[in-house]
Length: 197
Image 1: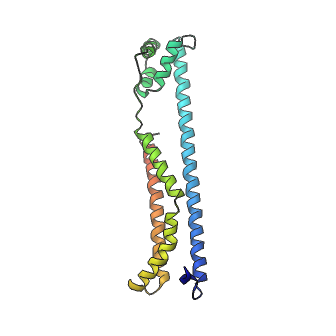
Image 2: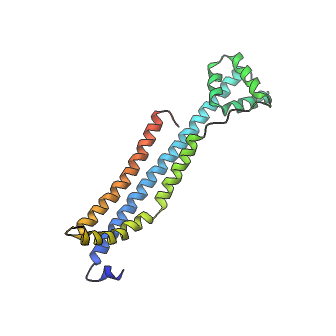
Image 3: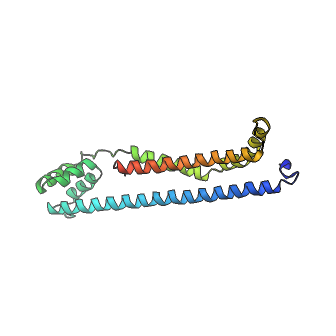
């Protein structure tokens, strides 16, 4: 570390810290954007679920299933956990709906467990993104690794100036950050087009 401050290298240190601060600002902005989209997606999903529930409750009342018929009302609750049953229920006539609810109201009938593959992937993506946003190791490598790597490459790599090497390292680092953001954005767009929540 003493080498950094020998020979008037203060400007270089200040310059590197300014770059580091800009990277932190970009990282914070990306984190805010990601978390904002994540919150909006959850809110939209909750609104969709509420909308489906209200629609199913209205259709249930049409076939005389209300809170006064507790067993059938519980059958409706079981049905809400099974997307296929909800689809059949919505497409059926009132007699078919009541038959489906009577079947689901039996104690030995359990709804099919929902496929949690997408939810597991979402949780893993959230974990990876939060790890990325909260991890300062990349920043440390950017600051110190660039110093060591830049000096080494300038000495042995045939570059004439240390600044050219450091500029190349900065470009590679920023390119990697943008690729990660692009892949996440592409995944979000593609998954919404395919109908995944």
